[in-house]
Length: 369
Ligand SMILES: Cc1cc2nc3c(=O)[nH]c(=O)nc-3n(C[C@H](O)[C@H](O)[C@H](O)COP(=O)(O)OP(=O)(O)OC[C@H]3O[C@@H](n4cnc5c(N)ncnc54)[C@H](O)[C@@H]3O)c2cc1C
Image 1 (cartoon, rainbow, N blue to C red):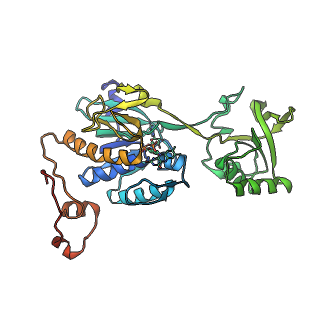
Image 2: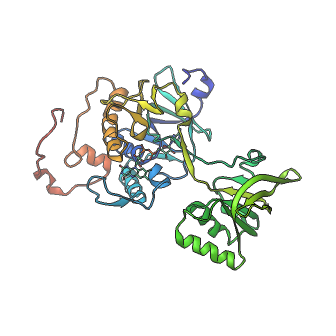
Image 3: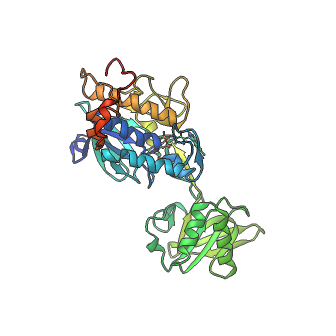
């Protein structure tokens, strides 16, 4: 982290907020809630195009059994419920952009910049970056890099861009098959290449793809791309070595690679925070990192006894929220209040409890209540 080294950048137009949360995984989302209960506003940023972190990227349809009071829900359902739960706090959600820079200003506030050039100013930062930002597994063959973002893609932003195009799609998981089945409607031709005969995608998608191959709507090759081919400096296709040992030339105007994502700690490792084996060291009272005002919750942090569970991350967000409040308003006492009985909490949550709720006395109040 550089300290006010780029004043022009730091004083330029930016989104102002109490707290910026880096990472919209389950823990980053719940951090919005815990901050909101204390009256703190948040903006949340994620490099992925959708909120949910590992739950959405790695296991959206798998059941989770260890979320308190929810006997079972899928990764996707958990994220949907969290998004609903935090909706009263109207946090800004900035997806598809990685936080690349964090600067501490002279006034103690922080300035953050994303890969899309969005600027934020905040009194505190919570890093809820999980195992890092997810990066696509790249095609590393001659000629690939110079076509990235033009004719070589790791993500479909606009399906219409592939209408009437010749597509070479690489991969055997759900993304590769889903996009093959979706783009086949509009593309001029599609060749799907997967390195082995077994697919990781849903069986129904594989069956459908093979039906389309049998009716001549697309081609499927078991093999590996050896090289990107160019025609007049433009991407013209790829050479593919197939399982029978033959190298074939596949013509294409676009190559789409869906080999999954792998986590990379990325820029977080360069912000001068104490690390222990790719995790951020925090104290267990505030979940603050080695830089005051920067907190870390969820899978990204490290402390004695740390367990990388959603449940543990949720607990950390509650304590971090109180610590952040104290950081932003030093000396001001933060009272613990129950959502059941506190009119302030009800106002913040935008709820109107039943009229007779005052008849219900909590069993025990904390010493600071
Ligand atoms: C297959 C599988 C099954 C699991 N099952 C369970 C289970 O049953 N119960 C359980 O408790 N846990 C389970 N887990 C673990 C659980 O998913 C994690 O503990 C949880 O996702 C951690 O949440 P998080 O918000 O800390 O991080 P993540 O979910 O990893 O989210 C972090 C987010 O931060 C973003 N990010 C990182 N760096 C940046 C940056 N610089 N800029 C912008 N964005 C950034 C990433 O893109 C990501 O979206 C499972 C994990 C896997 C892989």
